[in-house]
Length: 306
Image (cartoon, rainbow, N blue to C red; front, side, top):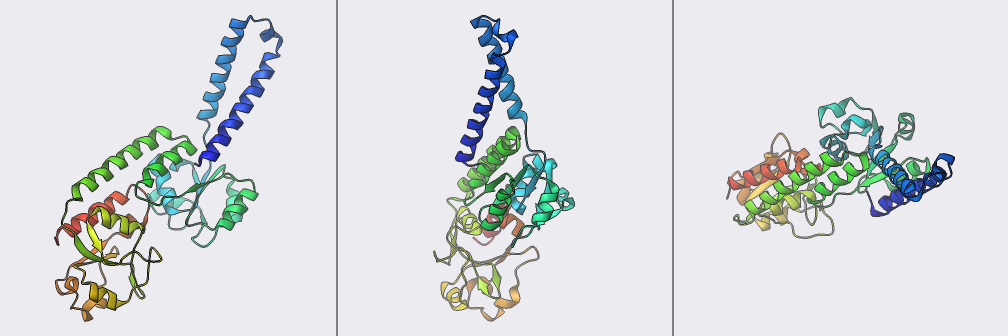
């Protein structure tokens, strides 16, 4: 939740509370009270008002990205989901929910039919035009915008505030921070390994800059042969990989690295020594606490070749 949204919500609640308090003060039974009694009654009224408001939480939530769906289940708010995006497949309960969005667009008619009181969209994934349309139809739309590994904890807390699952969210956020810090400390002194992370071989592409896998490589003391470039997921020439001589080739794939492509490039140390490493893509690209599993899988896999 943005600071602007939070301020607006608090301001609105205060205005409504004061308006209600003024109406209460005009009641005959209240007018007869002395000042001390009136203050006591007013204090109890305001306390009840804000407590009731705080307890109110969205009952019909729509998630427009898989990582948002997973985060909501993580904090216990999954029971309030009524619609999700394509590829929202974790946990299994999410598979039973209606699909209302793809990476390319939203299904506006389906969303309207579900009557959500809160929609959570992905800043970097959902089209700005779609978000604008949803707001024009009067829907409350909040944004998820994780950019760095540490943002996962912030996302959990913000979603907790939005949905009313604050305590669960804060607990999960603390646990994530502690585990991430422990992993950084464990591998910060590890022997660096030169690696090539391949997104695909047709065309040949990799990761750089602030790409999610790049941040995980940094935690594991892996030296990416692809230097900072114009984009986070650059296209790469095979000559560039041959010249850089990576010691390990990493690929996001549940079934293993597609080694056939590399057989013609045995001059690469990773190919000559058969040092390949496959990581579950869900652990690499879902901005959720399961990222920790990806980091562990990556670091432990690299340790075999150090």
